Amino acid sequence: MGADPGLHVFAVSKRVMGIEPTTTTLATWRSTTELHPQKRPTNEYKSPSRQIKPTIAVLAGRGVGSRRIDCLRDRAVRARPTIIPAMRIPLLIVAYCLVVPAAAGLLMLYDGRHELTALTILNVSNDPTRELWRDVNARFVADYAEETGLRVAVRQSHGGSASQARSVIDGLPADVVTLALWDDTDRLRVKGLLAANWEKRQPHNSSPYYSTIVFVVRRGNPKNIHDWPDLVRDGVAVITPNPKISGNGKLSFLAAWGSVRRRSGSDDEARDFVTELYRHVPVLDTGARGATTTFAQNGIGDVQLTWENEAHLEVRESEGALEIVYPPASIRAEPPVAVVDRNVDENGTRAVAEAYVQALFRPDYQELLAKHHFRPIDDAVMAKVRSRFPEIELFTIDIIAQDWNEAQKRFFAAGGEFDRMFQQQ
Image (tube, rainbow, N blue to C red; front, side):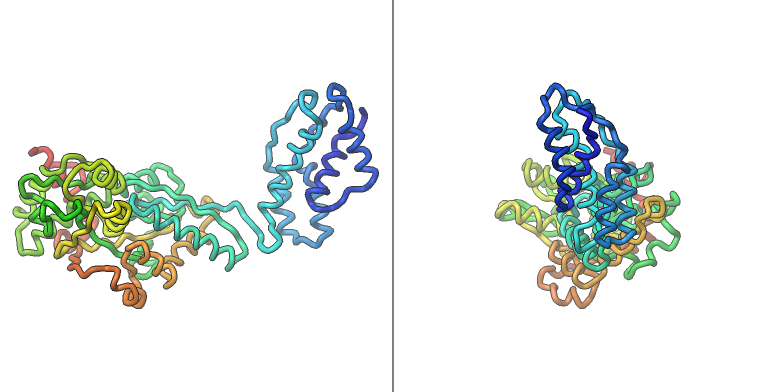
């Protein structure tokens, strides 16, 4: 009954490390486990740092570097195990509860080939990019481990682009933002989260791909929709997200406006057309994926205005129930990517976040973007995958507004064009 439970922890910890404990230690351990369940010794709580000492000693004896040992010791000091009443459970379970966290920490920190780390970055993105970043993240984690010997994790957050920007401003700890529009990203600079030169850090103004807005229609295109004017015919219901909070929604609005301007129409004519278009919209979802659910799953509407990549995804999943229609012209969207300077400096994640963003411009990642129907910015890669992307005239923001910042203020700010349209309705 006077046996020291620390000996049991020491013995089990040796076995976890693959080292057979001494005969004396085993004998003490066996004798204790054979005690009557009601007369087992009281557990003496030992601090995590004391529990881990045998493991650290073994590692040092095996020639493991001091850096890995320091990581293990730090993890032990940070651990806060729950104290379990020893008289209520078998002593072996007490020992198990003490040893396993230490062993698990060891296995997380060292796997025999690479030094591991619990370092995690958060990518805050817009709505219809979930499948893209799932594949990008898996490749990056593997590549980064191979190149640096470190393992990281990449978490994701998705939603309407403007809403996501607001969440980051309000404290969502994004290390990287991959939002739909330049203006949504630049709002973070205005709030002091990004450096003044954020868009000049990577090629092509930090846009690794470009895209556009296309139409998705029902099988056979029963409403015969091929161009923007077809959207305002009698009996046509249009599905598009809310342009106040969704990148998809803003681009659909601007594409419709620009479709009039590119035909030499005036702003008054563009305003009349877009106002009529939104009279054909029965519901404004908060983001692209919500609009897809409304159209593809709930069967509402005759045509959906959506990202090119989202259109391909939902048509594939519809198994023939939906089709893509490319209008003669649409807007060129160039979603930027950026490291959130304030957050990565606070989190100690700058090196990983910068490597993540830089990887997106490499040819192998450009090909992965193309696989998900995002048009790669690399001309050589685009030449290889050209057949995946039908020809379409893509006009830029400057036929509608001076720049994205001016477009945001003019069309989507409080009291802007979109608000005045709804006041009229």
